[in-house]
Length: 443
Image (tube, rainbow, N blue to C red; front, side, top):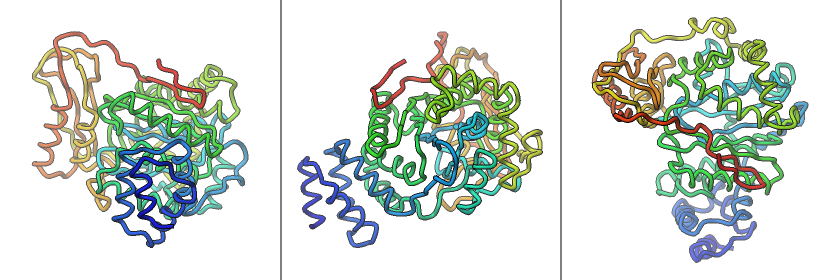
């Protein structure tokens, strides 16, 4: 078997066998197949696509290229959740304790942020002392005892995907739905979950900008889940503006705490309840989404969900007092106000611009080596549909030491993110579609 023959076969639009896909993935992971040949193959996939069976086989090969976590020591049905990334997306911090309080174990491995999207692990490290590194034994014990644990990804989870993603990033082949779907799902499968709920973002701040592309990606991932025996559902949710009002690590922890108290932003609360409802159904704790939602709303109103977050934080050496009193979380030295000179209605907020502005303040990473400031970020004061007068406050920048040029760039990005129109703007949907193995339901 030769790599060049497999490249040619895919270039010509033919379907690859499992053995051919295995030969490529394993050979590349071991360093036996050079970058230039995998680049050629990735470009062939970009133009010719892959069948559902091929994509499923590629996913399994990447999942099995490194450690595959066996979660069987944890009692119950383990349901994982994955978001395709966005700005202000702190749903994992809401979902983990909320779902665990309902009796579904949450054993989650999450990543760090890069660029304009934040990482759950970075956000959790805003809590003093919180450790994201647990041994496998500690991880299992905590989930069995507390119900939830969120840790950093193992160094040897899907090494093939890490290599291939790095290659795609520099060869203009990132935007291939089979390659995106297999990348996401290989990590979820390697992490050992019994069932998976996907939050596929769509809009200006998402990886997929159009609804049709988001649905296509969701279908590909749900197909993979079915192919490998994991019950998978995907929710298509809005990322045409940031989720919630706060962007930045400590600020997002505070907003997640507010949401678990029943006092959070309505959009964050609604998306969290919808995702959590699907997790409860897949975890066998509710017969349908409506029953699940009733259970979850009671856990929030009773304080049980917030108490579960406090327990999880304490178990991972974080300061539980910061959960009960969020004012103890890191805060920036000063604030800078951004005001509008236009009157009208907020027509749109380019989420990516807001994310980049937060990164310029130090809340995110420009490179993998960047050191982030956990206290800084952006607090939005106006969202889509709201009326504004000239001079109204659009956003507050939470700032520590930052180069004045970068601060000016951040202010400019925030102003450019807001589009103001004279006409009233209708509310935009939060959820666009649900994708299951039975098909697509549009809302």
